[in-house]
Amino acid sequence: MYRIAPSSQQSVNQFHLRFEGKLSSENRWVTLAQLVPWDEFESEYAQQFSSTQGAPAKLFRVALGSLIIKERLGTSDEETVEQIRENPYLQYFLGFDEYTNTPPFEASLLVHFRKRIPLSVVGRVNEHMVQRAIEQATVNSDLSQSKDAQVAQFARDEVEAPSASEAPMQEQLEEDKPQQPEVNNQGKLIIDASCAPSDIQIGRASC
Image (tube, helix red, strand yellow):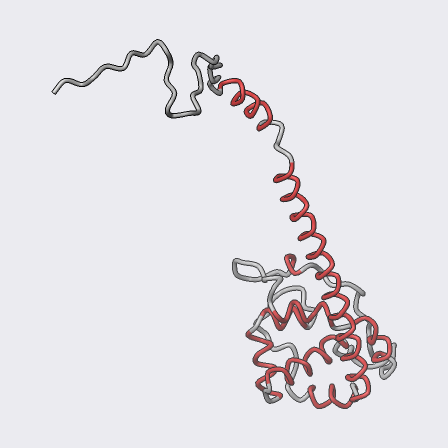
């Protein structure tokens, strides 16, 4: 039997830890969880199970997420389960709402996960992840360029025009600047060095 999970997971800040603290939104497993198209492939995975008979199967996110963890860490089936049990980030990656110290499943289930999720599905999941990563990088780049443009424009405005508080100060500086007194013409300009004013008497130096 298979029961489809809710379409959305709670925020990373709402993930309940039994000890103090919160998960970091910049952690690699939190970031990767946003790129995997969990909901888009769950209905296809659920078709392998009966909707009325048998015990509830593990969710598609748990199955696929466990295989991703195993491949990225390069661990055995047993070690993969142990890593998930010890690491709250891995439990968040698998869609858990809170940390638990209990193993999420038996290591033997990974064999069934590999059978139920063929390589063709894994390939399509990877394509969707790459596309999401490209779209996210484009959005971040556009936001960064827009922010840089706003900062540059602000800097140009600050250089080209004084602020409202600076304008009165500049006017006050102009008013306080000492005025140079006007100098009227009070003498004669003599061009020829051999000439002298007639009112200057030249005496002979005594020895």
